[in-house]
Amino acid sequence: MPGDDKIRSALDIALEKAEKLGSLSAEERRRLEEQELSEAGEALARRYMDGLPLRDVEVELGRRDSKEREAIVSHLLSSLLNGVDITDTARLDKALGAIDRLYGDPEVAGRIRALVAEYQRALEALRRDNLGGLEEEKRRELEHKGISGSAVQPNVEASVEWLEAREQLDAAFRTRMDEVRALWGTSGQ
Image (cartoon, rainbow, N blue to C red; front, side):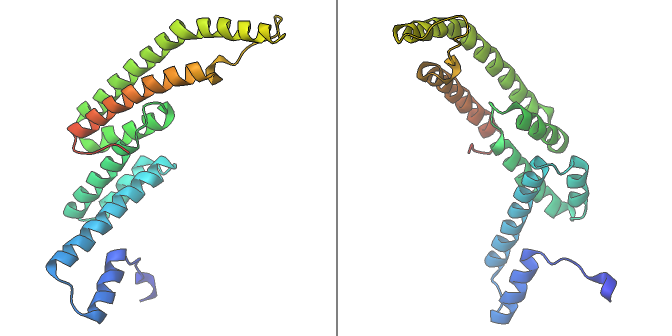
C-alpha cells in the first residue's frame, strides 16, 4: 500500500544486507541494535540542542517500544550530560531542562545547577579581585607607549593575564563537572 511506507532504520537496512550475505550472529545483531539505539539517542540530543522542542523529542521516544525507548533515553541523557559546558549557560539551561524532564531524578540537574552557581560566584570574585588591578597595569603600559587619556579603555579581558586566570578557573570547574558526570556513569568530552 502506498500509504503504508515506513522509514527504515539503519538496523533494518543492515539486517537486510546481512541476510543477503548470510545470517548475523546473536552478538553481531546485539551490537548493531546497540549502535542504532546509541546513534538515535545522540541524534535526538543534537536535534534537541539545535532547537527541536522537548515535546517532539518525547513524541519520537513514544514511537519506540519500552526497551528501545529506555536505551535511547539513556544515550540521549548521556549525550546531553557530556555536552554540558559550565561556561555556556544558555546551552546548559537547555540541556538541564531535558535532563530534568527525562532523567526522573532532580538530583542530577540540581547538582549541576549548584556547581554552575558556584562557578558564577567564583568568576565574579575573580573579576572583582583581578580586573581593576589589571586595568591599572594595562593603563600604565599604554602610558609608557605614549597612549593615554580618558577615552583609553584597555581591553583587560583580552589580556594574557586575565585569560590565564580565567582558564585556571574554568579548568578547575570542568574537572568538578567531570566528577558530577562520573556519578551518573558518563564521562566528559
